[in-house]
Amino acid sequence: MNIIKRIFKHGNKKEEEKSSFQEKNNIPEYFTKSLEKNKKIMQAVFNKVEDVKFRDIYLSGEHNQQINIQLIYVENIVSTKVINEDIIKQLMTFQNDDHKGLSKKERLSFLANKIINVKDYTETKETQKAINEILKGKTILLVDGIDKVLSLDTQGRNERAVTNPNVEITVRGPQEAFMENVQVNLGLLRRRIVSKDLKVINFVKGKHSQTSIIVVYLDGVANEKIVQEVISRIERINVAQINGCSQVAELIEDNPLSLFNTIYDTERPDVAAAGILEGRVGVFTDGCPTGLLAPKLFVENFISPEDYYYRFWITFALRILRFMAYFVSTFLPSIYVAVLSFHQELIPTTLARTIYAAREGVPFPIFIEMLIFLLFFQIIKESGATVPVALSTSTSIVGTLILGQTAITAGFLSADGVIIGSITGIALFLLPVIELSHALFYLRFILLFVSSFGGLLGIVIVSLLILVHMNSLRSFGVPYLSPLAPFHLQDLKDFFIRVPYIFMNTRPASLEAEDQIRQGNYPLKRYFFKYKIKPFANVDEEEQNED
Image 1 (tube, helix red, strand yellow):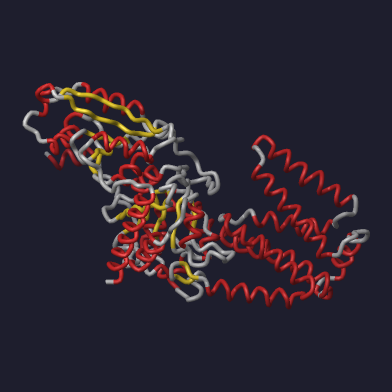
Image 2 (image 1 turned 60 degrees about the vertical axis):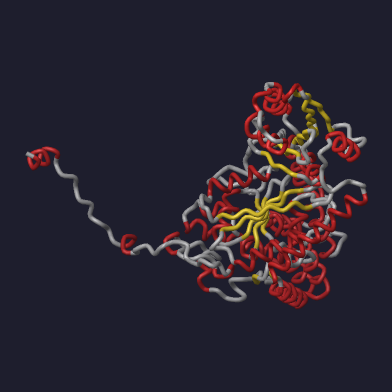
């Protein structure tokens, strides 16, 4: 009942916004039967908009009466070939006998179905809807004496082809990535999920951008409460423009102020399809080459698409390395500062002598030295991501070899500090989700600052506070730390390890999917016992038996 009320409330709100816009701009709500009045309305709307073209066509009608038609379109975003060959050329072949006995209302449908070759069209009486259609790349056809207009699909974009992923790179698996056209992205999903239960809901958001946002989910699998929550949050979006998926994610996620991202961002169709098949909801924005998946769990920051294209025992080793890399990149610099500043007794004597001997002549305290190196490493990392590809190698050589070696030789940094900082940076590159790397950038410096005056005790206290914060996070009602908190035993099959596919019979319990069964049970005996394959019968014996 609440859902129905929300839908009607949302509809009334849209009507109020539409009527206020029309009153403000002195635009009639509906078209009239006079072509001249309709032309004046549209010319007033698109005043000083030079790329909107008005094209008049005159046809001969019954009793030698002239039929006046006008086409309105934006020349930059339409296919002129479709307009010239499939609309104008076909209208020029229009004969008097073609429409004898038809009323004026029937004439419009006759033109769309029998004369014009554009298959995708709609009829509308509303001026505001026609204006929006023009701005989306469609052509409006007005006919004198008819208070309806035809909206013809003549969109013509200069689009790039489907290319390889740039961020989520894998050695094995599909080499396809989403692109800016949301309809192409939807087609990539349809190729992988061939099911009538794949539901698609379209929204148009942004007062000026009129951006299409598509919600995709698998009916009967995705939790209905999560689906309705996603839809409700998208409906509440009220902005002037939509710049991309990141803006949509920030507007609909539970904790936009948190360092941790609670909506999964992917550029790979296979990852999006796998998430939807598990019970997640996909959100795709026109003009954005990535898709959003909700809910998201913290453990997904350590899962790479390549994990499902290798044998399970290789995946186990890779995931253990990623978890180790997470702790190293987060805690190693702060532990280094805390031990050398407050807990020297934890270091073996021989190692302590080597470290302090190497630090002789360094003018900065340990905390300042580590802070300088981490900032220096972050600068190199960001410059390598923004400079042209041809210069990236030069940036790496100058940053790592020349400046690093010179800093040690000049006594500006110690050798052990450079080693700790380098290990921290290399470990960061093992994390497959770039959003987690951005969160660790802040956590690393917070822990480093606390360790400079609080030692190991300060690190433990801050780590507990971070853990409490992570435990409080929710992704559309799903606990962020699931399946550890709350604990779900069956979800551990794809946590630290990925068990063989024969054991992955259920979907993640954390997502509360309506259909928990992923696949049927497989008999295990064929994996532990050898079957004797019966030899093929001799051809001569078979022929004798047939005789």
